[in-house]
Amino acid sequence: MSTSFEHSLWLQHSWVNAKAQVGSDHFAVYDPASGERLANVSEADSAVVSAAVDAAFAAWPCWRDSASSLRQQYLAQWADALYQQRQLLAQIICRESGKVYREAEAEILSCRNTLLWYASECRRLQGEHIGSDNNLQRFTCKQSIGVTACITPWNFPAAAVVVKVGAALAAGCTVVLKPSEKTPLIALALAWLAHQAGFPAGSVNVVATSRPAIFAGALADPRVAMLSFTGSTAVGKHLYSQCAATVKRLSLELGGNAPFIVFDDCDINTAVEGLIGARFYNAGQICVGANRVYVQSGIYQHFATALATKVAALKVGAGHRASSDFGPLIDNAAAERLQAAVDDAIAKGAKRLCGGSADPENPRMYAPTVLSDMQDNMEACHREVFGPVACLYRFENEAEVLARANASPAGLAAYVYTAQQSRLFRMSKQLEAGTIGANATHVFADELPFGGVKQSGLGREHGSQCLEPFLETKSITMGIQTE
Image (cartoon, rainbow, N blue to C red; front, side, top):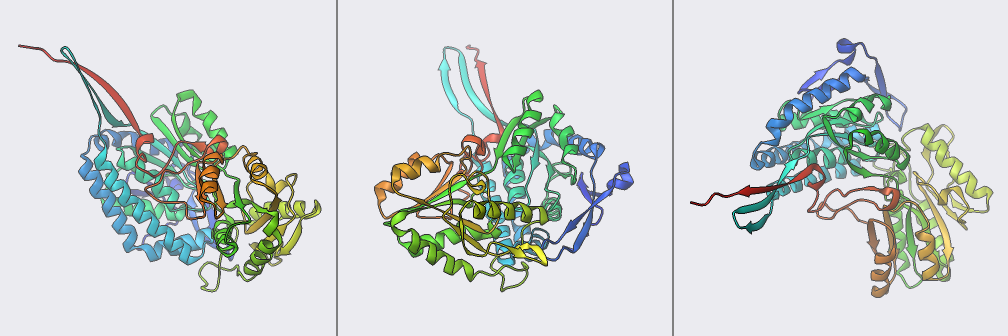
């Protein structure tokens, strides 16, 4: 694939120079590791957004009525195209998001698997025969909801696109996608490959902008039937209100504040390794990351020492370097927010066991950090710490830690480590989160529904019900004339 992304948007299977079309400007995309400008991308304005909705709405009837076998074929071909271009796609992710290469390539491979899952699920869409009543037959059928607006984040810039766009296409919907302004290049590459896979013109449209308010036109347009969004809870609430006027269907995957609970009967080394994965993957920039680490007092010191020893050996660096365990933070603003949370904790009595600061020449390169003696009144306890910082809290008993773990408006994920199977089941049922890792931290699988409770979102992605958010169930009562 040798496509240039300079000055480009993707509408109706064509690269569009928005400036030439409607007089808009461009915005730059930067490498978080070096600060180097990677590309200029056309800045979409309201006219471009409207044109994207026009294209999606015009393409919808034919795509809605297409055979499920055809949708399956195109999804499988898209999956194959991703696999064939996995190295290039991983390099794009690595450069524009800062993610280390092995994580970027793993993301592309997971995208392939997700598309194959959707390809199989779209053949299973079926209605239900309710039964007869005299001369009446009653049954249901599933139909696509229509044009879907998708807004995706920068921390999993390929996976989020594939999860949303792939499911919408599998269900017979067409899409207007707004990727994060920090990572639009991978979204444009994926759209190009969707075109190569056979999806019809207008089925996938990408509008990139550094001005999120521009996309409000799509949310106000009654032709857009649904919004699928992944991002912060604050932004999700704002979008929720914008969709109220036209009563759109919503799928929201919002912020988390995941507790990671370590009981004193667990295998400490296993729990430490699990925490490193749950906290430091993607430099800690992950919505299901272990935000509040509760360690039972009997093993607290032992656990803290073992964790700090391993974390201190981790290396932060550019994603393309094999020696890097994780990459940079996405931008300087993210580094400033992280440092503010660390400084607040230390000022209120937390102890720094390792790390706690950024490279003075590049603040996005933040040292892997462990803070102990955390308290519930610290800022880090009440918001997502999006960075490579593990915050350790002490607890005494199960009832106490359960109450503290659930004392958050967020409920995306939670983790618990213990040797007692009965406790695993009990905690899994009582923790207020949509996803539970019980002696495990690899909580994503295409076969498993994913989503939050409380203020962490609405609806579920993945799983056997993955296409339901994009479908309407129509009830039909049919009179049958007798001879």
